[in-house]
Image 1 (tube, rainbow, N blue to C red):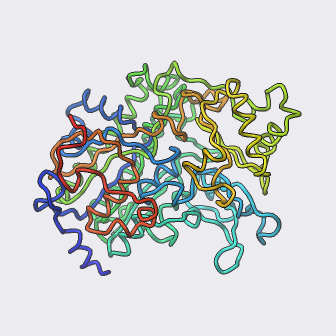
Image 2: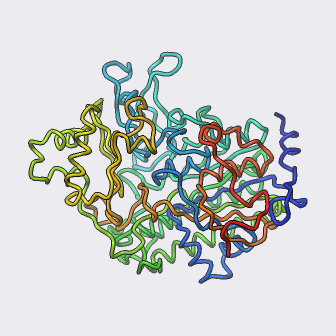
Image 3: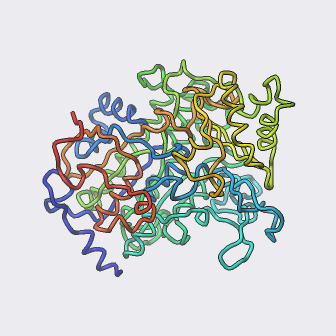
Amino acid sequence: MSIGLIGTIISRPARANHVLGQGNKIKHVLLVSVDGLHALDVANYVAAHPDSALAALSGHGITYSNARTPANSDSFPGLLALVTGGSPLSHGLFYDVSYDRTIFDPSNTTCTGQAGNMMVFDESVDLYNSANVSENVIDPTKLPRHINEQGKCVPLFPHNALRSNTIFEVVKSAGGHTAWADKHPAYDLVNGPSGKGVEDLYTPEITNVNGLDNTVSVVCTVNNDSLKVQGVINEIHGLKHDGTPGPGVPAVFGLNFQAVSVGQKLAKDNSDGSCFADTTFTGQPGGYKDGAGTPTAVLSYALQKTDQALGSMFQALKAQGIYESTLFIVTAKHGQSPINPVKTNKPGHFADLVAALPDANSNPAAIAIANAAACGTGACGFVQDDDIALIWLQDQSQTGDVAAYLNANAEALFIDEVLAGAEILLKCRNPLTDSRTPDILVQPIYGTIYTGSSKKNSEHGGFSFGDTNVGLIVSNPALNARVVKTPVATSQVAASILKALGIDPGGLQAVRHEGTNVLPFLFSDGDGGGGN
């Protein structure tokens, strides 16, 4: 499809009053993920700051106060919900560091022996210089390997691991320009299976291995976020993210913010003093003061700076003369839990808790977990934990016994629910036939983080309300302010982006596979929604 044709399609007005339509012609969609942003944060911030950018966006937009991520709320599945329109059922990724029974260790360049290995797509796969500063590209030698369609043993890039296409691929195939900015080079992921979905991908590393970790400090994290913000502002002006001449304003583009997520998690800001830019908040706690979501000074700073950045993009759209033709979406890949600080419980890593049980050295189920947790490479399983635990067993025939053992020791392990066997099949693909699905999912008691770290007091990745109930505002000058309390999933954002641009949402494989709908009341009016 030609660029001229997409211009015609994008300009098609919607039908109903007070929705996208009545002469409004959406030509661009700016998608923003404020990682960690709860629906409660949006409500509290807009109420306390009526002159803020968030308040302005909600003043001409629909606030979906009951939005949830469609699966476990780690960064990868959270972002993929927004850009594929689906869950791990379709895109196949549960975590940035997970496991796949069909891949091989990075050192196994011939893909020989038994398949099965950790699938690592975090800051550790960057190419670093001698000063331990990321070159902001992936080092292929650090990637797991797989046998491709041509039968060759090759590195598995993040985009190769994706099983369904993205909005960027669909929009690009329709002639539109695309761009995205995120926190690690591993967010090559958004390119989709083609590897070519995003024309202008910008990934300034936030966490340099053995170098500066910006996430120790809310100030350094804000500074890292500002790099991406400037990149997006350049793109709003028709340039590439680095300010060099570009092809024009992208049809779909955006970025993630990390400051709020970091501000929520930090037990003590800049605890090691490595962020030299941070003096104001050094030593202060992040997170919330209470269960009502009152932010600490550290989190307040993160919210304020993120809101100012949203405002700068807001003003850039106006200066460029494209404010009215842009759909501005603010949401989050994931939330964070617990909100209430008195709920925080950090008993240690999940496998360590299992190892401390009285019969851990003799019970086959405990030994199976210990073996999976100790597996550094190869087909021996894996245990991933945050405020959830995902378990891939070496011997899947032990699943029932391991699940029973965990349920029997639920109190000592702070377990709320164990998903395995028939129960895991209610939400996930069959682990016996799908190479990515964990054998067991463990949801702990709310507030429990499976870590012994003193650096953070909250986390994400699980299924709890705090993890999954994220902020979602869809804004355009043609829209009246409205609060919709109808339950929606963030995967509906992807379908809505395409429809707003005049492109069939069915172009997304995950939308077809999971039956994902567009967001309610955005394209057709109604008196429902459980509003104000």
